Amino acid sequence: MADRIGDLEIEHDMGYQRRAWAVQRIGLGMMLLLIAAAFTGVLGGRGPLASRTLASAGDSLRLEYKRFARHQAPSQLKVHFGPGLAEKSDSTVKLWLARDYVEQIDIERIDPEPESVRAGEERVTFEFKVSDPERPSIVTFNIRPTGPWSRKGSIGVEEGPSFPFSQFVFP
Amino acid sequence: MDSVIRAAVVYAFIFLLFRISGKRTLAEVTPFDLVLALIMSEAIQQALIDADNSLTNAFLVVTTLIAIDAALLWGTQRWKGLDRVVNGLPLVILEDGKLLRDRMDREWVVTDDILTAARQQGLARLDQIKYAILERDGNITVIPREGGGG
Figure: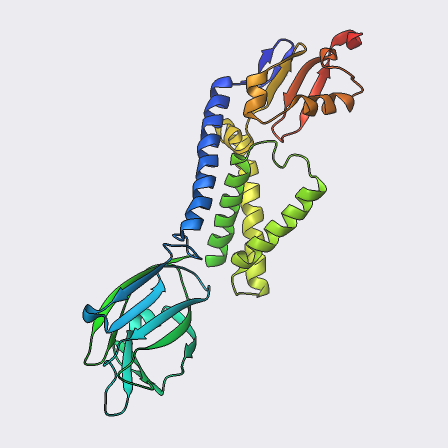
């Protein structure tokens, strides 16, 4: 395909060159889009769309978590207990997470530490003491998602409200 | 397996970025580019090896990167079409002392870049140049007019 331009022997193809420029432009646009997307939070990290809050009917159990997380990046599950959720007799909340979900995260620390953790067939149950069952309280799971892509989880309180949630983990 | 996939994905991503950002972007390595390269390698390194610091993983990653490189080299000399995609084509940006502005603009080349290349060959002015070519590697080569152009 080596043609000549004057006495210059060179492979020169303006048709191809123009197509290459067009592709290059699209690519540059996509680079900008990627950076813009990072600011919205849909790629994980910080941003208005990164986090989401779900609540049970009546708002007695609320979960604040990263809708878009990243593989092995620190992230949180913030669980809000509404007033009246704890058992009045011993001020405990028995919070459970779906076993499938727990297997796909590393739990680094739970704040406050649960009194006990019990493994079940489909659920892992964490028992927390709250200072005042009539007032709201919060527990935080510091986690790192392991392995990428989409996963479903569910959270609930024994004999109480529960709901599913979904999370996307970028590789 | 995941070491190989990770290395391949990183290779593809960096290749795309370099190809998209144009011939000129990293053609000449300025001191700043050198620092940039170090920062980029630092940023990509963790993702490339994940938490696996074993020699096996390091060898697999390096082997994959070099194998892809070798495969591309083999493929580009076998198939012209692939060669164009991977390496691009040279582009004449000055002909008979006349600047081809639209091409220069597309590749972000300024007149000074051509004059710099000319000076390296002992040419002082644009009208002494017969052709200036933006090569596939991003460098500019200059062919003087015959008879020195005065």
